[in-house]
Length: 313
Image 1 (tube, helix red, strand yellow):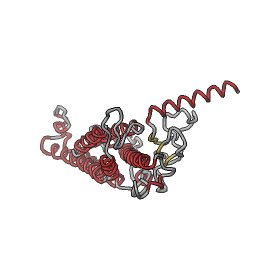
Image 2 (image 1 turned 90 degrees about the horizontal axis):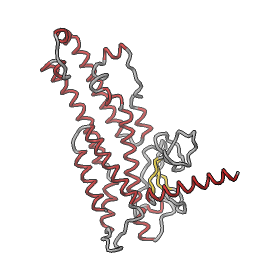
Image 3 (image 1 turned 45 degrees about the vertical axis):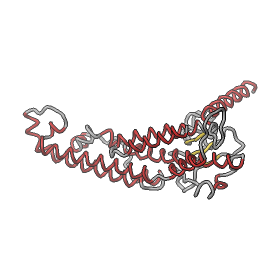
Image 4 (image 1 turned 120 degrees about the vertical axis):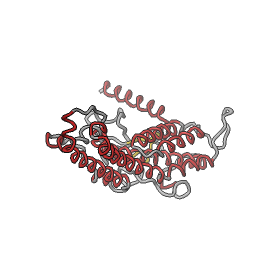
């Protein structure tokens, strides 16, 4: 299983080496499946101990994977390169407009009226591409910031501004590149969600090593510093620089969690947790330390017991 995880990370790194937003999003999806695999295997990892004839993971392999997940420099560089790559594609579009005309560059048949209007439309397309390139620069700045609240403050809200005047003066934004440009905020947020999941996966591996050495899980994450972690990984959604949260060790299932985009601590309740109030809009991003299956079982048991209690009342 650990070899599969290493291979999946190598595959994700290969995809994100291509400097396009699409490649970066696909790579993050592949990384996400890897983090989910680590989550599901938390109760099945064997370190240096053969069980039922299954070759165990070595301590060195787990430590190497932990170190790789803690090093975010390559992933951050890839995200920046994808923004620059998209910016270059916008500029290439302008080159095609110069070489072939607007209709050919946009893949449309050019009529007589189109050719007459091209000199009037070209400055508008140019201004719109400038807007798109500047937005990519804003995204680069945002993903370089330490947390989501600060990043969110420097990204356009994404509100729909498509008035008649806006549509006339931003023809590219409202056609070819519209979906990418209007999703800038969600793109940046997904980057911070990815960072949260990556840090929780690394922290989970550190807990695994601690449990292997001590026969128990740590009472707090501080207990693992600096022997298993150089420091507690910061929660990229926390507005006050707090680290990843860890629920009490005697709770089953145990959980790591990020406070999520709203910045509010909901005690590790995920978006689809049955313990959330029906009118609640906030939720955290949990990482289940006992595997998602045990979490589902505990969730259903808690819901069933609550239903029985309600009936008795």
